[in-house]
Image 1 (cartoon, helix red, strand yellow):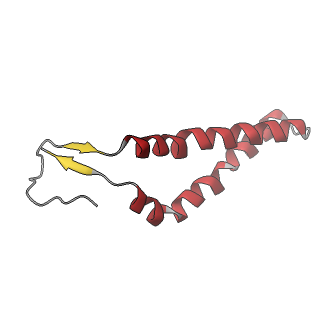
Image 2 (cartoon, helix red, strand yellow):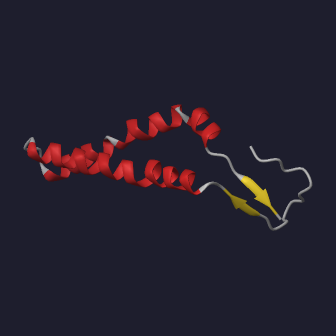
Image 3 (cartoon, one colour):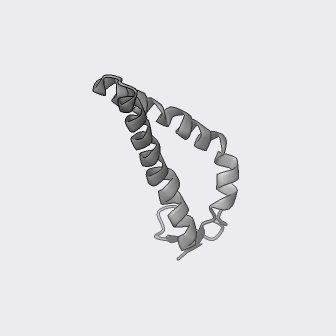
Length: 86
């Protein structure tokens, strides 16, 4: 957590993080879920599920993915460090 001493509520600040951490954030939040969704959709369609059901089941596969991210939130919060600048 960033040191916020010396800052007032409503004051304009710049929040920075390392670019590699930004890349990981995009991968975890967008790319990996898309891959899970697409892979699930392909598997369910190839298994001869109805397309609508296959889509719903593929969306359902995101629940464990985001659940795992939620369970790992303490570990991830230690990894993602932010800095504040005036």
